[in-house]
Length: 445
Image (cartoon, rainbow, N blue to C red; front, top):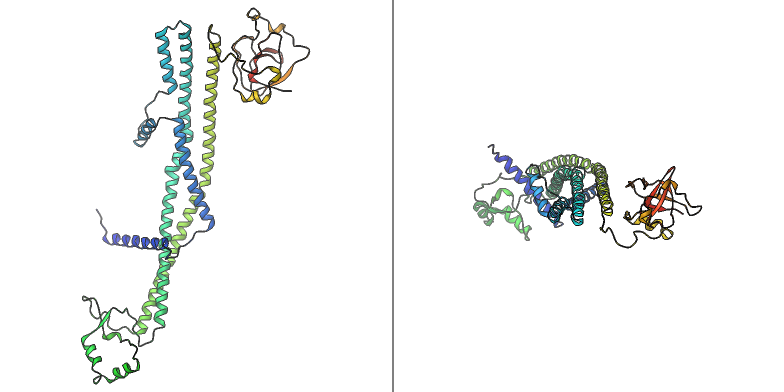
């Protein structure tokens, strides 16, 4: 293992300098380099994107898998890079129970037959749910996870580097400011005044010389002229630290000023280097933050895919349940829906109320009397008055030759016949004619 002690000490010193600068900024004792308003807006938008992406991701996972234990299991399999085992959906499990109940209670009884039919429909619903979960996970959840685990981690890393560069820059600014202040102070100090730090004591020989005014009349005379206090030339001083000797001897004022000039030059050079590093890192971070717009475009495309898959899923569910309702309506002795009419009478039906209700296929025959069920529709003539135009709301597949298949958004002519079930109308489209359910239509005035 290559252990570089010098590098370790250097990194520790940099970390300590940054910590001091950060603490002083928090307490308002140091200046802080502020970013421009556009950069701050980019940072705020990036943080908002990250937060809302996490929330949408979590809630979508709850929608697709309400069981928290199953979500934890899938998360562990994903982290271990293993394939998630296939899991039976709730609809498929319900279908299995209904099929077993029908086999035990009697598959030839009306109840058993109905259980078998519902079981088949629930099985198809479970399969549709499985396809929806798989499609939504690939087209919506995976891109969101890739953004959080890829792009956002890169942005966070560059932002931390930018923060470190800013702390280094502000520390260099503070160091230059202190060096300039010390240089200005040294420039204004008189020649006879001490310019070194004051942690010095007199040597024994210097004390004896200064105390004996008869042997050193110049110092006695100078002392009488400065009764309020005076300073000594530094060659009479010794450092307080025992392990250090005369410490460079005596520094004259020009040498002291040169020392501070060198310190200022060094601080200015470090500041220029820190400013260059900060500007370079700020540009890299800015480009990554501006890339959030591309992430929004990608998320928008994924959102459209999610809505498309969800629409397909609900359309499949509706079609399966519609087929089930038709099958149950043909069973003798079964009840579908309520005894109330599925829709208001023809005269009181409005486009708003018709469009707002889910279509329910009437279970009775189009013509009320059973003996008239074999009525030939080709022989039925439209009444002289009372025909209306209607717009089809949903696709409808004809159950037999007496019904008219419908396509969404097409216009047909409809009318009612005497004694006809109010849930049905006679629809005409060109040369084709047949019974159509009222709930699939929006009657136009």
